[in-house]
Length: 540
Image 1 (cartoon, rainbow, N blue to C red):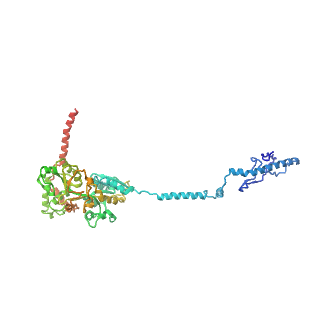
Image 2: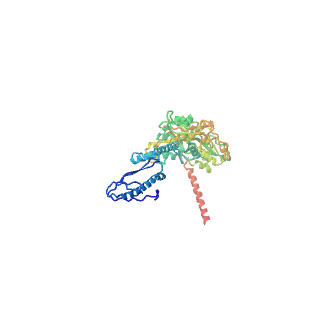
Image 3: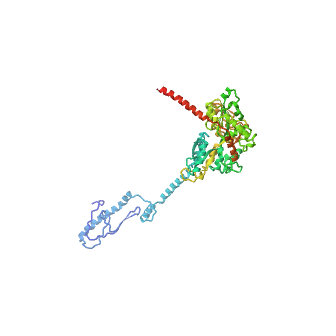
C-alpha cells in the first residue's frame, strides 16, 4: 500500500453512543482555523480525524490490538500527507479576503454592522456631489405671459417677432386683434356690467389698445388701471412733455397736472383731407389746402366725412379760427348762432357722414373729397390712383392709439385664464419696444412715432419707397409739416356742459336724409339682377 493512497476505512465498534473529540486543522500559511465541532459525524470524511473510543466495553485481544496498531500507523501517515496538501487546495478555491471586509462580515453576522463599507459610502457621496453641482449649474428659463389685444392693422406683425427676439424665450406672447376700437371698448365694459369675466375677453388681457378719445370714459368707469412706477421707466422719461400733460388725468378722467398716467401712446396721426386730382384737373379747380375749401359751391354733394360730432363741429370751429377744444361757443366770433349757421352750410356740402364707408364712396367716384383719419386715408390713397392727401393749413385734430391696462383685478374669479393678478411684468418692456423710433423706419405703420410729436420725424429710406406708387401729400412719415403741426391739437375731454352744447348743435341741423350707403347697396343689387338673366340665358 502506498503511503499516498487513500486510507482504508476503519471499522467502528458498535456502541450505543459515540463520543468524538474536536479536531482542529491549522493552515500554516494564514493561520485560519477550520473547526469541526463535537457531535459532528465524520463519515463523509476519509480518515480526516482520529477517533478515540472512550468506552471500555468489548475491548479486543492482544493480537488484534497489534494488527490495529499497525493499521493506525498507516492511517497516521496518510493523515499527515493529507494535512500538508490541504492548504494548497484551500488556497486554490478560497479567495484572499481583506481584514476590513472580514471584520465587516463578522459585524453583519452579529447584527452590529451598518451593512455598507466606508469605501462605498465615499463613492456614493462623490456621485451625489457631482449630480448636485450639475443641477446647480443648470439654467432654467422663466416664462412670463403677455397677452396683447390690439386694434387690427395698428402695428405690423413683424413687431411681434422682433419683440420675442429681443426678449428671448422668457416671454410667452399672445397677440389678438379686434376690428374696431368700439369692439375693444365693448369687451372692457361687458364683464364689469355682468360681474363675470371671460378669460378670452379683452378685459382679461395684460394690455389693450384704447383710443385717446375713449380714455376719459374708461377712467371714469374704472375700466382701466393707472400705470404705476413710471418714474423708473425709460420710455416715460423719454416721452415729450406734451404727451405727459395730455395723459395725466384725475380719477374722473379730466386733465389734471397732479393726476396719474393711465395710458401710453404708441402711434398718432391727424385728420386729413383726400381729394381726386383727376376730377379737379378736369374741371380746372384749385387744389384743396384748408378747411375753407370744403364750403366751395362746386363741391356740394361731393364730400364724404367721418361721423364724429367732435370732428364735424371741430372742422367748423377751425374754419372760424377757433380751437377744437372750445368749451364755450359764446367766445367764438359771432357766438353760437354763427357756429350753427356754418355747421348747417357744411352739412349741405357733405353727401355722406359714415365712419366706415366714407372711403368707399371716394373709391367708386361718388364723391371727390373725403375727410377722415390719416391711418384710414393714407393706406387707402396709396392703393388708389390720382389721390392727394393734405393736412389743412390752419391745423387739424390729432388722434392717438394708446396702450392701457384693463382693470381685471376688480372682478374676483377662479376661472383658468382670468387675470386676478396684476398685469404682466413685461408690459413696460412691450411699451418701450413700441416707442422705439426704429419701429417706424420701414414706413409700414399707419401712423407716426410718439417721439416725433415735438421732434423731427424719422426719415424713411429711399430704398424702401422705391417702386411704390408716389403719394402727393404734405404728410412725411405720418407727421404734418412743422408749421402746420404747431397749429394742430389733441382732442381734450370736455365738461358735461360743453358736451351738451355740441349735441345741441348736431341736433339742430338736418343731416342728409338718404345715406350713400343705401345708394351703393341698391346699385349692387341692380347689377346683380341684371347679371342673373344673362347667366340663365347662357345656361339655357
